[in-house]
Length: 362
Ligand SMILES: Nc1nc2c(c(=O)[nH]1)N[C@H]1C(S)=C(S)[C@@H](COP(=O)(O)O)O[C@H]1N2
Ligand SMILES: [Mo]
Image 1 (tube, rainbow, N blue to C red):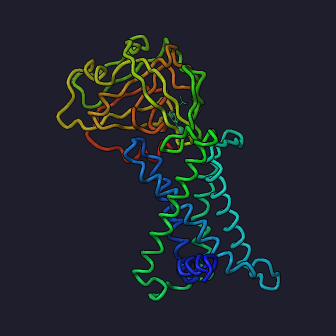
Image 2: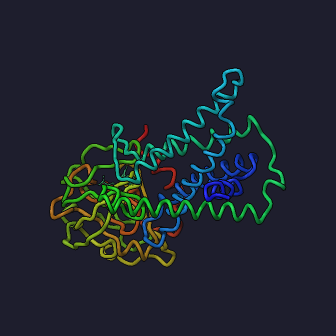
Image 3: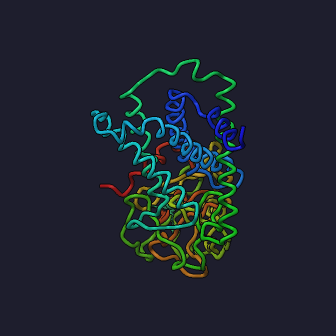
């Protein structure tokens, strides 16, 4: 056999039976949505495998989709074979290509902005739309998975090869980015691109969906520290500008990061100003004037900063003046802006996951 035909034979052996390709696509797309969403909550470098899995699965989808298209292309190109469900198939395909294309372009560091959406946000939008489409598409031509299509050892080998190939492809992409010194070369393990410089003007103002309060009057502003503390207090903006400084990295899930010198008061000192914390104290919740809120475990919260300054300048309104949370190793959406209440609590706040999505809507 010639090398060429040997390669082809190897690829054929790797290709799964049609039904297995279809079910694998559903599985891979579901796994992409899960790894993508969970990755939004990961800010520590130890979380890197999750991001790599997301990328490897993405490359795997390219291969699965190529096999699938090679099989069904006539159903798409021959009008005589069009059925009612073909429209859904085409929409699903376009959405899949949209999420793949935006993901691939993002990886090379290109950032075409669509109004205030970064390309990464568009990628997320395509991905979230894709899952219901794939499910609906699968339902129109439902065929239960059969044992023979998923013979255990072969399936395990196929998936392993697909994911390993995906990781290799991603590694090659990294090398190409370095070689040609593209903007993609400076991305963090989270995929975020750097925003360089110091102070208010050097990084974007990002609010999650609809949070957009009026500027807070500095003189009238009071921060309330309460909950499970022996002496609840109210502090002025000047009292918060205690001069504690810390360098911390803000990494937004829309795909950018910045390293800044933040100034303000350590949350530990803030809590000490409110007497003793109660026995059951376990979380500290930071609430914005808009209702947007997030909590940190007590020990982590003590080390966090309530910032009034960035890069030596007083925080501007857009970045959360008079005071915003600086929570190192947490993703940007957890860095609550315009904080008006710091509350010591005994219980985890599940509602924060919903509130951050809908706060600001009337
Ligand atoms: N109250 C409030 N805080 C918020 C947000 C918001 O929408 N409302 N957006 C969060 C998000 S998604 C990010 S990335 C950071 C962005 O901070 P910046 O606008 O100072 O860059 O603030 C976070 N804090
Ligand atoms: Mo963000």
